Image 1: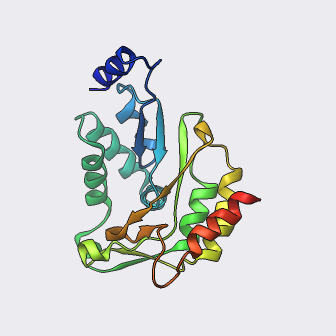
Image 2: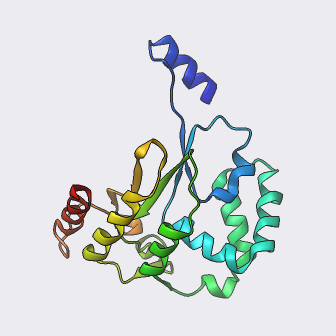
Length: 196
């Protein structure tokens, strides 16, 4: 499919296409090695959550990545398979509250830097509207988002881009769009961070 898209682009007068894939974390390189992906966007906060599980269950995690990636499954099937292996059924039956600051600490300090990786970040996250029992990041607020954005802007990132999850992903509580609680506060925080 990528070859087809590139061929159509060139035929239409473009020099080429840059193919960017959403990418949970860099330990999935074995999955991507045969694909013609130019750059990878780290999807947050899923990647930071995965890094925590990875540190805790390193050998089990790596073994599962290799096992599942050799089957050429879709990347989310790989993640699902790993999570199933390292998160117990009981763990999935409760609302998970994760720390916003801890996630950002991982994003800023533990996510690998690569010339082919575009950094990702998030405003906040609450996917309970989608799944009732889900994950909520506790402690998110516009002032913290601004502080962390100032830091991630300094971090090297491919194409000098940063992907923020998301403009209006209401089912996952990840959005920059104004709301009744915060108004324009997240957008204003982003503007102030970028103006420095």
